[in-house]
Image (tube, rainbow, N blue to C red; front, side, top):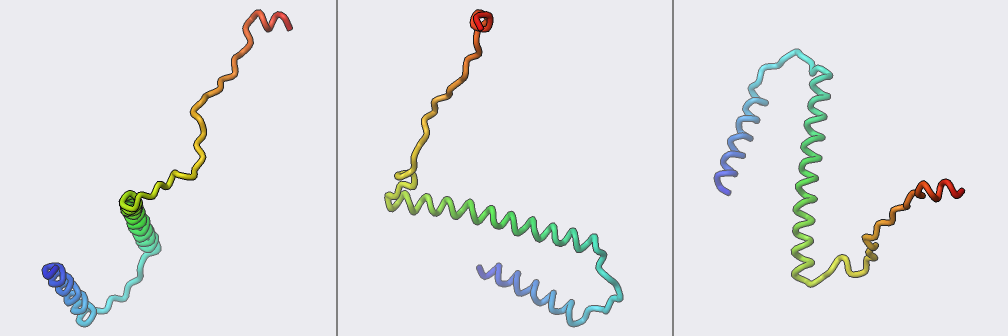
Length: 96
């Protein structure tokens, strides 16, 4: 934990130094760069959301198991029967 605080503090100090003593640049941000930045941010948000969802389901499953809660208790289950319609044979076709 202490190492992470030191790394974060050093990064913060470097960023503050760049803001205070950085040279002014008369430039603009290209629209294509902004599009790329928006896509990168959206990707990070989606990935973080997926990770949170996975760990949420795992934690919920562990809690339900520990408390003896069955999520499927009141759910209706359909049978696995498969009904296939048979086509009429040649004899049945000729009779009609």
